[in-house]
Length: 109
Image: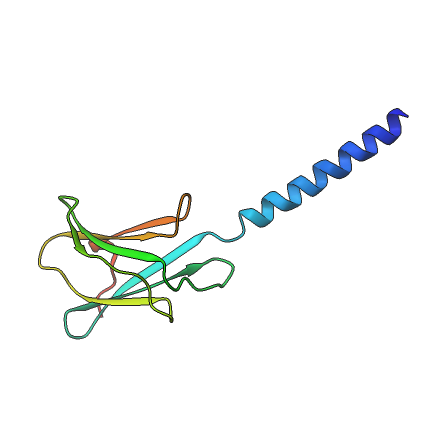
């Protein structure tokens, strides 16, 4: 009887570990780069290869003012005019799925 209980416990534990790895399999990803015309283009998605259309992507000043409120388009991108003041980009796909990109980390053309 103890062997049966141990086997069941091991099976449940193995299934739980497999499910937790699956849950962690799609981390948020966001990349921004400067493009011609004083524009910034950001692309968001997840590590499992899926896109992020409709996900919130805001451009925020260092004083916490939202400079450009936005959402990623159908192609999982958002292009905006580079702000004159210092800023960071906040990709927010919900709890545990947030990426911040400081202006200093945005690639020049």
